[in-house]
Image 1: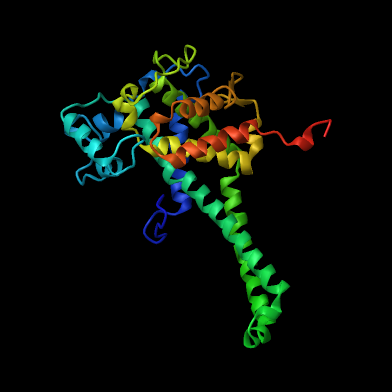
Image 2: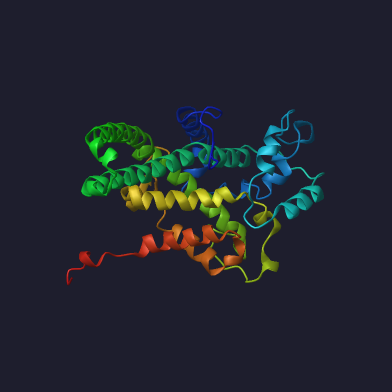
Length: 318
């Protein structure tokens, strides 16, 4: 469902995938909505290797058809090629992690968001680009009809009428997607989860492995300092965080700017991204060896730019 050319007839629809993600987000609320993130240490960094790859008899989660292990095995990793992944899995074939609801729920929620809301957001941005291109093409042809062959020029009014009808249908699809992807409550819930995920990822590379309960300590430079568990993490976890922030800054900035969010429906307040997001972007730009994908690094630059850019027209002296 999250692939570039996914066949819509062979994968679950947007509604099912988004509802599944909503259920997992609710299940994760007890530990992600905690302002102090006291349960963050219970998320096993090596969960994919020691839990998802093993059968239930061996204390893992894999099913009899090997579908769960196959899903996690085939994912692109943050900083490891397939040869290194296979060697690491072989090395830890006998290793297994104890069952833990928080770790299971964290990775299942991340996967559900990847296959649900993030895939739907990608559809929405693609629809916006398609709509803009189509409108530009109609405008271009109408502005210079004399460039068309005589036969096409004669039928241009009928063609324009047909194109405008198609444009109306595309706008309806866009509005339907907006009702889903721009729901403020839904975006806020995803935001809280990704805040927890960013803290977990920063904790993995923290020199003292104590973040967020202690100030972040920048890791040393060099490939030798990159933990194996970090290198083996699915790339989509980092990728989805970055793409979600880019989406918010472009299409729903109020969700990101809002300085507080209700935690668990109570009076306690949780800061959203203003304390974690800049650190997240700066750390992985300052230590680029932790991330293998050049595209992902460039998107981190986009995030930092969007967070720090100031329109000169907003300046009183402009």
